[in-house]
Length: 132
Figure: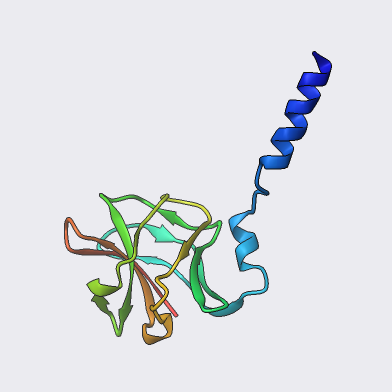
């Protein structure tokens, strides 16, 4: 019986893929932009973000201190000169607080914008912005 358990354990270790932390993907990446969120339209939002480029891919990283008071189905996009562009919406917000890493679309260039925006489609409202 011990031999069977040992064999099963060895087999499991051999076929289990190595787990990689999301942060490991960003190791050695280039810091492109950074900023802090400010709530809009009566929302309380705080915390910092970074945009990191790793190879040809950009990532938006909401830092550990990110906090959002909540809204129905918030989404993440970008603005230029305080004008939100719906074409830049790329993801829903996964959590209302804490560190989160989002991969930006391959053909998206965040340097063409000057702020990250939390947006609510349901109410067509700017929930928060973070200028950079």
